[in-house]
Length: 331
Image (tube, rainbow, N blue to C red; front, side, top):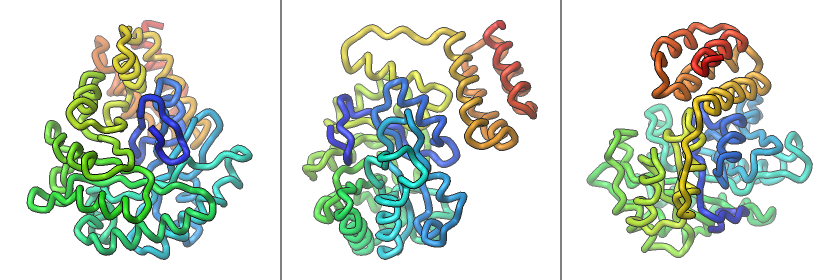
């Protein structure tokens, strides 16, 4: 599957997740089989005003593999400017010659503070503006050879499931690929509510690659989505939190190979490495505090994990957090 400038053998992507898909998460998932990862969503307007913290989210580090940078906003000219900046400017603090595989437009975020501004999934309620925004982004990326991709939801609610309409407009605007989260905005992230039928309908309606997203927690979930929807790729989100090995499991399933679950020792070593990567990127104070909940996910199913998770929540330093993790591994 061709997704932007990245050629993906299995079509496996890591979804953008605010607060989670930082450089550390992207690198670990790439090592386990994610062929393309997506940054946390970035405000195009904040980029326009030169906000340093926002620009830091766009940093791509060596070893992450192909990365798509996702932006959100509702003003076509501001979104176009962000595409131009990312197409050329991001290389100033990334490894030489390394830039995003694509710029992804967010029309799927359901969070109220985003939709209240007419951004994220709220754009699906205004197809005319959505089409104008996408056309502006595509045109801005064209001189740089920067592909534009799109992430949408099934629709706003059950009465406004218009993913097919938006997808057709996106194809006409020139986007290179479309990811469909099979829930409406109203459904947020309610488990078991993904509509595979809407993903399949989008796949049948457009000729650009279509990626399915939602409720992929096991390799079997991924295979079922691929079979039912006929989609070109699979995007994994919450299923990869504390379990980057899920990508390895999906690759094995797609290739018809037997998969061996990671040992407790491998899980703990990966958790410790995840912690160290975060601390190296963000400093000990922020890195430890951002890691507490995530590290607890690596302990799922390990005896005494509830007590260990509680201890992790109280860890103040990387050394303390790693010591708790080592207890789970019996070391």
